[in-house]
Length: 254
Image 1 (cartoon, rainbow, N blue to C red):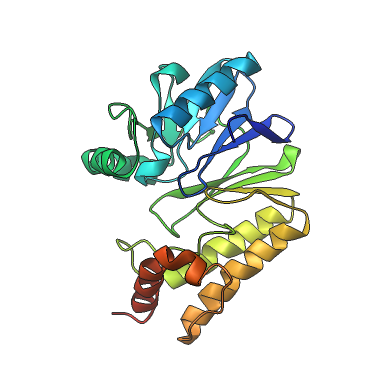
Image 2: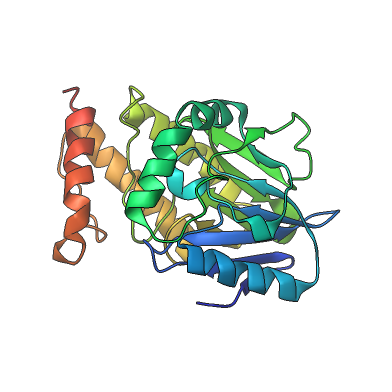
């Protein structure tokens, strides 16, 4: 998808070929905020072209969480402030060299120098519109953004139709963390018609509740010590088998 797809007033999405990653562009009061832009260098160039066509300046960036594929940037987006939650910004700063190495190994043509150069989002949200929904499922300082006035929830690496819930190996008790996060996202989702996940298709209408139900069912099964029945798992997605086994082991306290 070379072009930006408008999913709501002032909210655009461009999907990468790399794990169906979504770059999100949001119009704020003073200009555009780029959220989790990626992935390959050629796609970042295409995203820059698409943003240029909007004719609105980029005023800030935001990373929903401190995993390398959500910490990318391109010089064409400009030398503007880039934010994450305070907890996520701290982790990103400590793991910057590792994020650069993973980006270099996992994708092509990514500008390495700008990776993970994020600072803590101010308490008032600064230029980032909407309400920050912070939790600790999947990654330290993970944030969703509720754009209530536009009926959109930007979910980060949650509520995907292609990825199962993925635990953070550095944090304990991810089952409880996910249950708490999903409860918070459930409340936020009641106020929207559109959910944009970090990876996968945009959910609209009834699909929003279906995404929540799928993640709840997966986590519920792990809490019961059972093998989840999940359409996102299977021969079509054998690359998820390793992370899924890791989830099972972590849930069982190994």
